[in-house]
Image 1 (cartoon, one colour):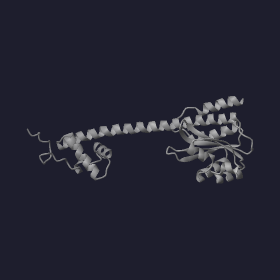
Image 2 (cartoon, rainbow, N blue to C red):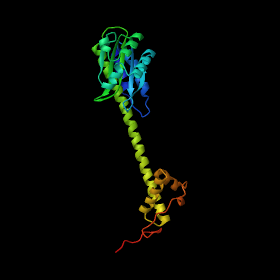
Image 3 (cartoon, helix red, strand yellow):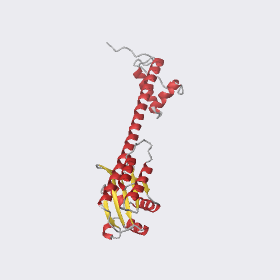
Image 4 (tube, rainbow, N blue to C red):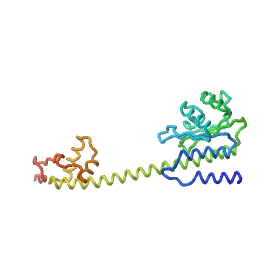
Length: 257
């Protein structure tokens, strides 16, 4: 299989079907492995930010890169952490060049101790939204070529789109569930208003006001109490009946002429 054929297969894999419970960590791990297979690099790692913008997930092609990623996450240093913050990539960073790594000296020292001499950071970014970064490591000092850099950016873009699709699907499912729950709750509350207004011989609005006052004073959830009334789990006799305009219980008086 040629490199181009292998790259085509990987692109199909990275852009494959996305489900709500997709294994994002596994997808990132495969991204790092594919980078080592396709590119002239020794290892690769990623940081992924959660939906609040906090870097959380670390994936790597080997244990050395994984530990270095955890170190970067803890120290908030390194090209990957910087790329997450700024959304800007870095290419062919010489880890022995102190002036080039002045922003993250502890990371540079740890990377050199691991055996890496050159690194690159590629943002996981779609338009102006950055959700993480891919870092590439080399144990030799030669520069990474333009073709390899382009492949790394392309794979990072595909993974970014897959992750954002998965997050959008989860939000959509959650919103659908919330709307369905709200509709069901509304139907139950309307049923309870009818039950209470008939029992107390009041209007449904007066019955609802009494029910709402009851749950508020006891710090209960309206939907929970309404559901309990429908199922018989809540005894409606404990709920104070509304007082009508004439001072008693029952149907309201007609308006004055």
